[in-house]
Structure formats: C-alpha cells, structure tokens
Image (cartoon, rainbow, N blue to C red; front, side, top):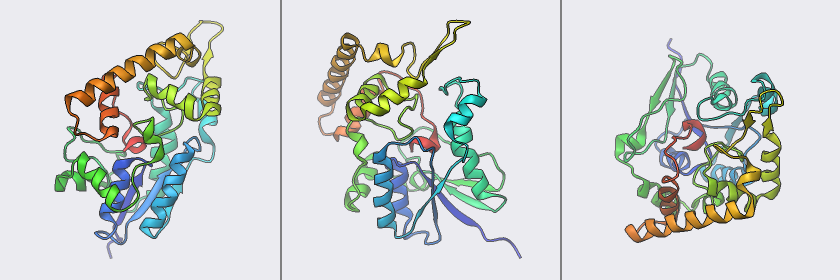
Length: 268
C-alpha cells in the first residue's frame, strides 16, 4: 500500500503565503500549515499568525531548531548571515521543515505569484514535490491584496514600514526599513546592534546592513539622508502610477535600493 501523500504549506507570516493559505483552505482540506519559527520574529508576525489560525480553523504548526540562532551564530564563528552566506535559512528554516516532512511523500505549496519572473524551491529532498497554485491560476499581486481584504485578514501590521517578513534583524532589510525598526521597535534595534562585531585581529566589521554599521546608519545626519531619499523615491513611484496600493509603492520604491531576492521560506 502506497503511503499517503501529505499536503504542506509553509507560511512566513507574509502576504503571499498567507493569501495562498486562504486560497487553498477549501481546495485542500487536508492541508498542513507550518511556520518555521526562529524565535527572532517580530511580534506583529506572531499576532498575524494567530489571526490566520482563527480564519483557517486549524493550527499553524510551529517548527523550530531548539538550539536557536545564537547557537548557530557561534558554530559559524560569529559570522553574521548575509545574502552570500544564508546559514540562518538553512539551519533555522529548511532543516526544521525537512525534519517535519521526514521521508513521507509531500506536495509543498509555494506562494510564488503568476506575475513573478522567478521559481523557487525550499528543499531538494526527492520526496518533496513543489506546487505553485498562484502560478497555475495566474494569481497576481493585486489578487493577493484582494484575497486578504475579502477574507478580513488584511495585511500584517509591519507592512506599514517593512515590505518583507522575516527575523527582526533580517539582512535583506533596506536602509529605510532598519530605521523603521528603530522607530517601531527600539529595543529590537538595540538587540540587532549588539550582534554587530569587529574582529580585533583583522579589524573586519560584521554588520547587518551592507557597508555600514547600525550605529552609523542611525547617526542623525545619515538617518535624515536615508529618510529624505526614501520619501523622494516613494513620491516618484506614486507619481508614476498613482492607482497602486501604498504597500506596492513602498516595495517598488525600496527596490531602487537593491535587487536582492529574499529567501523564499522567509519572505513569501
């Protein structure tokens, strides 16, 4: 007898994976919803997931690595994770997910939209088959906003100042988003600063934001420059297409700063 195929949707606390959970709720009643919890998430993420659970009528299972971020930071020689070395995603997101899956045949549902020019797969295990319902059905970003609005969940609160889900110190944050963390969660900003180090032997700086420390970024003159540039970019995006939702304007304006793709399991 063939083993039962499991249906699993990994949620990040972001808009796309949440909209996909809403979209699939009645289409796949045996769906298992999971969230890989690093224990370094924003409180807004946890609050939003609680609301999602109430809507789905079933729990979002929390997966985690019991040793936590600080353990792995020590293992990696206190090298902070970066776009070039994403050990946090591997150790705190993908491996807990793969342990949960085990050797069962699984269909993994991924919230990449029909208007995105990318593919992605969070695991290479042969028993896990990815599926992209939004791509299959041509669901776009505007549809995602509509789905979340119509079901009553709306957007996570952090989207007022941040365009991606993930840890509070995620290295994919843009400069203006780091200032948003400082404004909205000053203690978490200080906690993030505490992770930054300088190697006493080589003088090398280990910082979250590329090319400058959070102390430098938060310097009043530098912070004002970042805010001024951010406002200018937002205004230019609004003027180019005034019909867009604010979250879309914010995302597009911040994309002018960099084009790094966030980790799928963290940011969808």
